[in-house]
Length: 413
Image 1 (cartoon, helix red, strand yellow):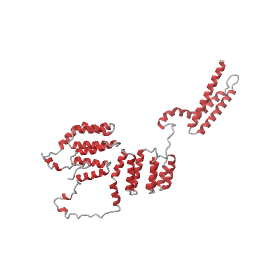
Image 2: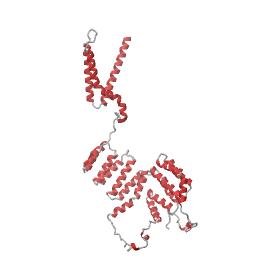
Image 3: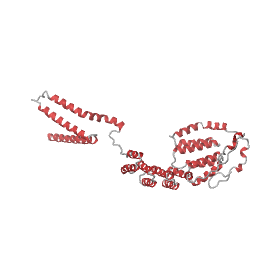
């Protein structure tokens, strides 16, 4: 019974060893860079090991090893070391080298557009699009390939409808990232404006971004671009509808005059600018550049810090704004508060909001430093402020501002 149990145990261990050897061999064959060479090593190992040991066994005479047997064993060892030393050393060093080169981790498949780029540089645009489409067949949602294909169609082949179809097909994909959709549509709007000189189509595309991603930073950026389309339209139309410009006669004998101050062009009226900005914002409320300029005019020209704070607060409270822009608006607000007599504690709260909202950004360090020296900044500004005669600021105080209309803005002076 004991012999049978030992036989079963030896058989089980032999099977486990056999399966382990098969598993190791298959894994090695799968991960090998040269499977044919590995199979050749196995064959040579089997022939040398089995043949050598069988030949050595025949040399055993009367229970004693012949003088040639040790040399045969040494020969087998040399052959095995030549065959397997590189593989064994690779197994030992692979965990260390894998920290630097990634080891045997499979590389992520990526599309290759080098062929398409080379064909585009040689002016073979149709062949370039075919090369891109071959890659897109394998990676249908790759933004780089979609963008390159649409760019060739629009900029090189002057086929904006095809470029629009390419971008719309990408934007219709259910897994397309919103940021990439907005970037693709913005590029399409630029092509409508710059290449086709079609501001209406550009406006339609940008309005589509706002409708698709409402209350987002992408919608705000699209709204701001829409607000500036009017100026671009005038420039485009000006190329084909150039009006004759009347040039007034210059001043004679300007060198003999005692003063030429009257020749200096007048600065643009801030009140007039504010009115234009208010009308612009009625149509394009997302234009943050114009709103910021209006806030500065409210504070610096009309001395209405309350209106300036209202304009800046609208931008600061916009959702999904880039941190740098929000920090910039808070900094502008703090500057206006300092210039126009706000309390030290009010300015400190404004700067502290930068620190609390963006604690890990460089702007937070600047705000902390400014808070630490805020009293000195106030004192320096008070020392530099010009003295005014008593009663100077009361003159015409009732005529300075008018009642605000639907949109808070200064009245005509």
